[in-house]
Length: 244
Length: 222
Figure (cartoon, each protein chain N blue to C red):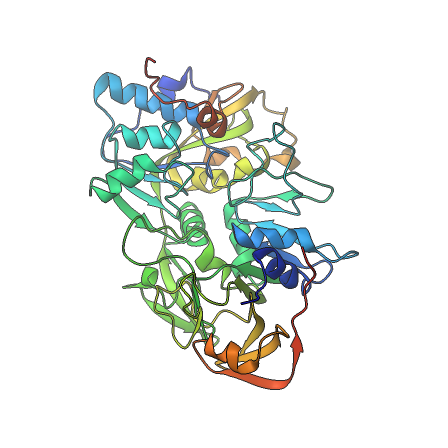
């Protein structure tokens, strides 16, 4: 078995209009910039995919990566915990103009909903958000004298994730805090596509250090020396590049 | 009016963190608390995006952008650092494994309600990990100015802004006082010596109770 894909274009070829796509990363760390830009390339060439629902912790920063995807108008709805950043103008303007829908979810609830989606658990109870505006309309139940809010699982058609090493069976390691949502999103998506900084042969990753077991990964593409969103933003980059 | 600076409030909060405590500091002002750990004590800091035991900011130009804290600022690793994914990170939060969370506030009510995530329906709402952090940490402390910029009390009977959590705050460190929340009341523990109780009460939006001596709030020049 070999889950490697020939290139970035092939990696994002299956994403269709209206799909839910989980995109890994917390701010720039772990953001699969090259996969996102490949998706933008496809949209610019074909007009698809559009009307996407995107799940990410944030709403993009500057004019690259997730912000660029949103800027193209490809995203109809964003499910996130913190749609602010150093430069959140792309999302902010569309949101205030009513052109993008936002489902705001507390960060830990977002992570657990994704985990639950991947683990086959349709709902769970959490103390988070009890008594607040974000719990409105949700069932509440008391356990051991304390009130908890029912939250539902979150699943996706696709996940786009960045990992460090990956073998051809899809076993993954991550680099430092770039791990964040990656392992959860790989579990929760029907098809998890991962860009790895280094593609290796099965056996090259010590089984003790595998973070995401290959069963949760459907496709890998190697992107050595991946871009860091923060570096791109410090260089005032935009995607697609605009002629100066 | 004499009052503590933000740095001094952070210093005071740091004095109550015990050696080996697992601590989450909210982004922004609370991050300052880490600088003032008393000598001989070493807390282990947690950040929501998946690091325990991270170190100080790196020198400019040496940042690794895979190594950031919840405020998206670059940090460093040190001996004993651990990485983990987001579900584990919030298991640490909700599961009662953190000893202390220190957060900022717009308002704190006498029953421990906290408002610190939204100033109302205008603009783009953003919550991050605040609603998770207020549940689960053994102590949830707030550091804040005692009053707003236009002089209104931040310690109130009932929050007027959208809540982050219900009955969750256990101690408030302000620019004028240290106040515990006990059984639905503010209990004054320390106040600036230069300020009378009545003056402090007049700047507080709910009754300050006293339970034994009120100590002087003394903080070094910083």
